[in-house]
Image 1 (cartoon, one colour):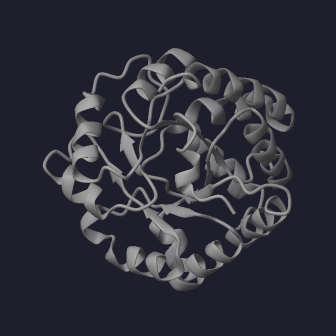
Image 2 (image 1 turned 90 degrees about the vertical axis):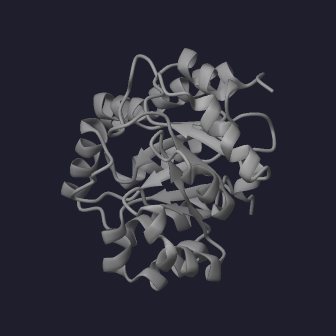
Length: 260
């Protein structure tokens, strides 16, 4: 099984995000295979939640569609079991503390590791409150992936020192979504991370929606994360989204492929 580190071992990593169960779990499974074929290095799978506070309207709507379609955490686990019969691409879950709590933190983490997931991202858990999740993740060998934002300032070095897997650098304040420009001094954020923890890859997410922005962000980091732009395509094309998403992922991956 490939680990998170392997996703960053061959140039800049391209990390797409999709919401599990939007439009259906069958399509989610096909999207995973298609995105890997298109060049994705690591895939973030969102477990839908009724109140996703870090998400903009695009991903909120995807959460609602998935939940109204009857998606549950256990059904998503079953889908991952199927996926792991065909691919060992590194994958991480992104969800909210309540989803993990209600499942049982230990049980959730143990099961996620058993079915072949590599990490967990909980955007509503501040660094200062991560201990209960991080400890259990470390016990079971699942990376608990930390986030830093432009407001983290002096905390960036502290967060980076204790982080595992990779560091999710939030490019701009507010919720997820596509943006025409990113004005945060990302380069300075990433430099602080590299000084504090030279071994830790730093990937940039929030607001990357086209090849040009992906290229700019990849030049300043170890990888780029794209969510809303992909989820928007899925919303537009529904059951027929797989070829559209595959072409879009290939376009963005090609834009960052030769950056060293």
